Image (cartoon, rainbow, N blue to C red; front, side):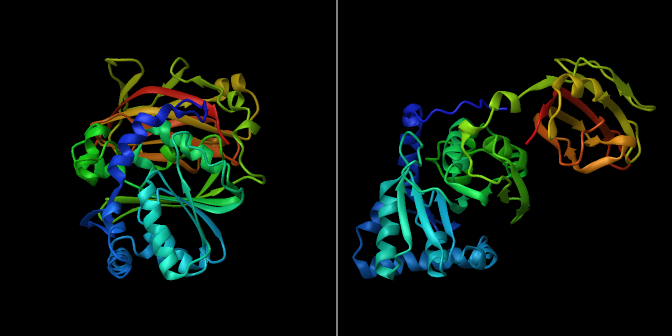
Length: 400
C-alpha cells in the first residue's frame, strides 16, 4: 500500500506543470473526435464559441459515456457536486442545466475560463470554480458536497499524487456522499502492451500525455484509505476500454484524516511465515524469489492451498473488519483467492478470480461486517486446466 502520509505542500509542482501543459488540450466530446486547446476556444467570438462548445457537448451525450447523464440526472438534481478535472465542463454544465449545483475544479485556468464563459452565456448561476494549485488543497471550498465526480482525470497522475488530491477533496464530502469515477481498466492496459505508465498515456490520450494508470476497485480503495466506502457500482464497458465506480462514503461524520488513527488502522502481519495446508493433487513449486509458488490440482473448484488465519488474528487483536492483501502472479489458468468463515464457507464478496497474465497483481480480499475470516484459500477456477501461481507477499490487516 502507498504511504498514508498526507501533507499539503508543493512537492507536486514540477509534475503538475507537465500536466497543465498537456490538459489545456481536451477531448472534443468523445475520445474518437480529436482534441482542442481551451485557449483556441477562448479566442472565438461568443456565437462561434458557444456553437463549437454545444456541438462537442452534443457529441459527448451521444457517445460512449452518454448514459451517465441518464443515470444520474435525477440523483444530482438540487445536489452539490464537486468535479475533479472538469476539462471543458461537458458533464457539469449538463447536470447544472438539470438542477445540480456544480463546482468545477481543474489544474488549467483556461479550462475553467471556458466553462465560466459557457455558464454565463447559458445563464447558469448555480456553478462555482476552483483552480487546483500545486498544494492540491480544497480548503477554500465548503464542506458538505453530496458527491465527488472524477471523470477520467485523477488516474492521469501517479498514485501518490492522486492519493493526496483525493484525500484533500474527501474532506469536503458529506457523510453518505458519493465518490464517482471513470478510469481505464487493467484489461485495456494488458491489451495495449502492458507499457510503463509514463508511456501508456501516449496510446490512451495522445503524444503529450505524461502519465496514466489502470485502476480496479481495490486500487481506488487504497487511494481513498482510510476513508470507509461501500461499493455501489463497479463495472467495465465499451469493450473493456473504461471502468466506472460509484462508491458511498460509509461514515456518519465528514472525513478528516486527522480523526483517524492511521497507524492502528494500518497494523498488519505477514502470512508467509505461518503454516499452510497443501491439498491433495496440488504441489509446491520452487520459488525463484520470496514467497510461495504452487500448482493447482486439475478440476474446477479444486482446492490447492489453505492458510489458517487464527494465529495472525490473535496477534493483531480485535477489529471491526479485516483484509488480506496479496501480490500474486498467475502463470497458467485461473485462480480463486478467497476468505472463508467458520466451516470453510466462503464469505460474501471475499473471493477474487484472477486470470493468468504477464504482471504481478495486487489483490485485496475484504471481510467487513461479516465476522472474522478463519482461512485464506486458493483454488483452481478453470475447468480442464490446472492453474499455476506464485504469491510474492501475503498480509493480513485491519480494514475499515
